[in-house]
Amino acid sequence: MSQFIRRRAKRRAGQALLEFTMVIPVFFLLLVGIIDFGRIGLYFVASTDLARSGARYATNYNNGAGFSNAEVVAYVKQQAQGLAMANLTQASCAPATPPKPITSATASCYKPSVGNAYIFIDRGTPSSVTVSIVYAFEATTPMVRTFFPTYYLESSATMSTEY
Image 1: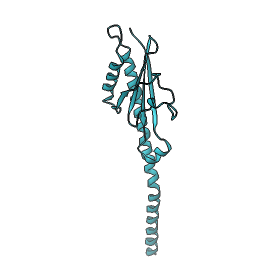
Image 2: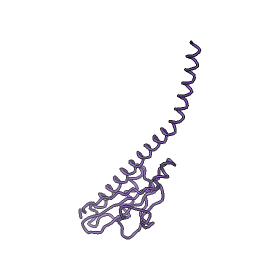
Image 3: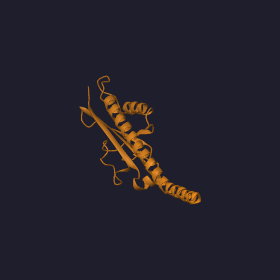
Image 4: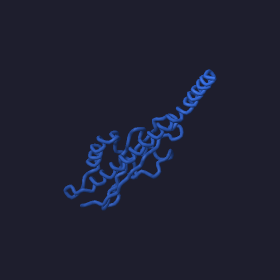
């Protein structure tokens, strides 16, 4: 009787190992997918914060004229050093506000390369400044990347001028 129980226990151990090997790839795919979605949330919050601080800085009083676009870009780059978006450059597109949403048909000057971000400053009206940031995000998981290719995160902030 004890031999029968031992043989049966060995078969169950083999079955558990087989089930584990079938489930573990799906588990790790879900885990890495969750990490990718966490990263996209991090970059969205960082780009929103940078756009807001850039708009706030652009609308401050500076000898009656406000800060120039170059000064605003330098300030936002300085703020981005502590965040995950250090590769920030100013883009020169017309109009200065990127279209929403950015698609494959959108002009290439609005689409940065993967891992980089563009900053746009629009002083369209004399009483407000709009700062927009576009970040190109790509998932690290190859399986997720096939379903969600490069995604462009867009953030903008508009503030009234103080001068």
